[in-house]
Image (cartoon, rainbow, N blue to C red; front, side, top):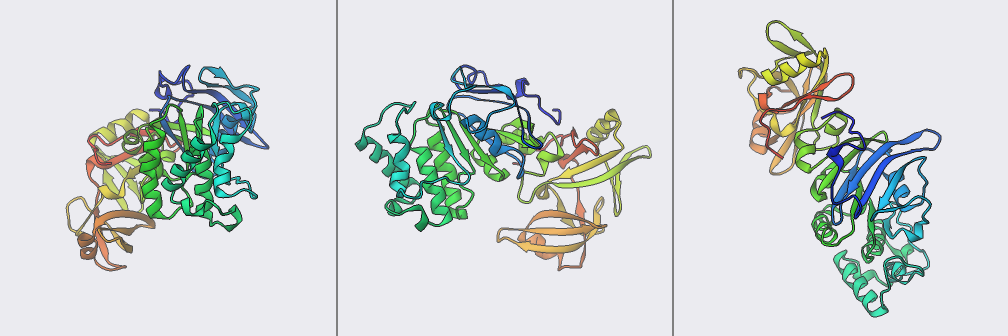
Length: 394
């Protein structure tokens, strides 16, 4: 797969999306600088697509364009087969959770949640007050803020405000859900609970859903498909398995994993066998990676290996590359051991027993790089040259 996925590529097309879901083609936007370039995605009815990328990638601007709060410089937006060009935000039928919450400060939590159901000229049909309040009650309980329904936003914590804003979006029956970082300010336990609950609820209704988040782990856990953007461009579109096992570029690889993939810059040396080399490291490449590197003609490359695929070993182990333990972070069931390899910090996710057996900070240890765990990227463009031949772990 190319490092840049073209907006009209079949890789991002969903047949059911065209005409009944959301279709976006060639959307670009500039302010003082270019923010979005040729953005294109399809989202089918009931499909949850996670839009993820680093801070400043253009996620919020893209959501604001879909909601009608910003106008694109170029491009086409179709929702349920209707062109959104020139259509006012209030008539698009979009339920938008703002990253900044945008709660009405003079209304209580309940009144904020009720507000879209009582708004004039609603494009999603009428709801009687009894049904509306019942829907609000169910949503507030789901989000664990039912006890705060009479409070004003000024009396809420940041996490409570986020859930109040989320409730206001979820009570609607829109043509499109846009959720900009819907659970980013919640504690870890509640985030874990709501990821599953929200996914179950959102995918059970007919509207397409875009869930914007900078958290790659969150994107992997909630989405049917993931759209990765960086610098306002689509880097890759795929399922969680596609993104995790077959990242299309260095930009994608560094977004996913806890910790993320080790990315080791170096160069290739051919002495009958193709070697990956950098200071403190010389590694013979397995045949599939060597063949891909030779075909691409790349001399400068980046070697990618996920921390859970690396193995700590004694320094005399065959094929092991030695380094010095820089830190050891225990997490109960596993530990993250960081090893200094000639000035490069490489992270290894190991069992507690293995991590403890490796020794303390400053001790020399070996790392084994399995042949079926290495991904090779072009050192200049960042595009993937070859993936592991037999990687199956998510």
